[in-house]
Length: 116
Image (cartoon, rainbow, N blue to C red):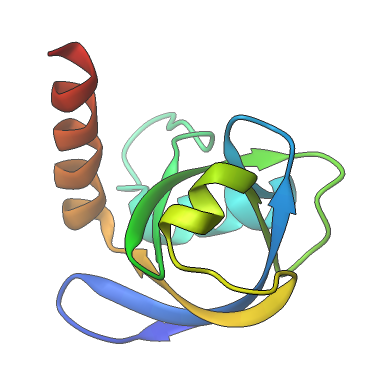
């Protein structure tokens, strides 16, 4: 689904669709697989529900796994689609998936911004 793209990202293609939810979500099974492949260290018991970080258009989005979201689909809140410059959804788009170190930086930055 995703291929190496740069030092900080993998690239893949997902259907991007609007969602009435407040969080960006994808198929729970695929989310857990990506989490295990990309973020797990192989040491001890690890969480597989940690948010993935994907760049869609102009925005980095934390992505959660959710039952009921079709495979190969990213379900994005309506207001974030507009901010990310996604036009005419649902549409098949190239998305970037942050590698573990980059994702940690982006999540920490987002948490700092919310805490201010």
